[in-house]
Image (cartoon, rainbow, N blue to C red):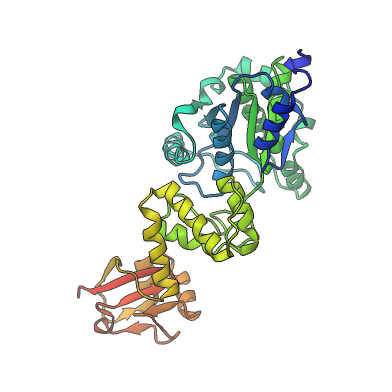
Length: 398
């Protein structure tokens, strides 16, 4: 039955069908036919996801891979969630034009706790094995040298990120060259059968196979998932571009952002975030249902109706929200850019830009670009609005 590295023989039709279903939304499942042969063994597979907790919060783009892992769980397989508390100190060079800054261990630990809290809104905690790669990567120099000897500089430099940086004359540190080896060794340490990641992780995932082969272990399948576009429908979802939907954002903010998803992207949002085809209804209703489902997942069953009513009040009936946080001020006269910056937690340059572009309203009426100074009495008790969704009720304390 077995071949080199534990490869089973020709898979059954049932196993091929299972593999096709699991790989349905993936970009690639490599090598071809490997997953079906693994499924044909009739045992739960160990499906690996490695996460470096370099930031405290995740957005819906991160949940694309988590959703795929949930599909594996529902098919009876074991998820191994590896928290890269050790590799986070090195920094994944994937998609980077410069070396990542090294993080403080305490910050890494805090981020890991937050990530797991958010990830278990998608994953079944009882069917998830959580491991920290410092368990095996905190190794002595002899072990580290032996690991380094299992690959070559030429192999490590094959990755596009390094090639682009070298062509541009940008430095690539020796520490960064180590990252694919360290992440790949995770697959050896936990005996991974499958590893899932975004398309930008393909090099790292294949390195796991290389190292498993060098340790004479069965080779994992590699499944790469699409990168979710942001709510602009163009660039990948990212906090740096501002086109993201955070999983910890308030329900009304999450629902409102989902309603901004371009119609052309609705199908991939449904497929990648809910593993379903969108309903056969008009695009606006499809977005609303997507919003209800995702708000329910991350905020509970009572949140969707409140979030949708908030959206209707602001964007359908054009009313002011029922609940508005107050903001106290004491200056007289009030310099509007300073007030906007402090009330909404933005910079003064952002506040000035919003004023100049007509993005500031007072009790629903747009404010002109001039004047910038107002008597305190003229603002007391009124509702200040930034953009379409942010409101503060002004309270004069002078």
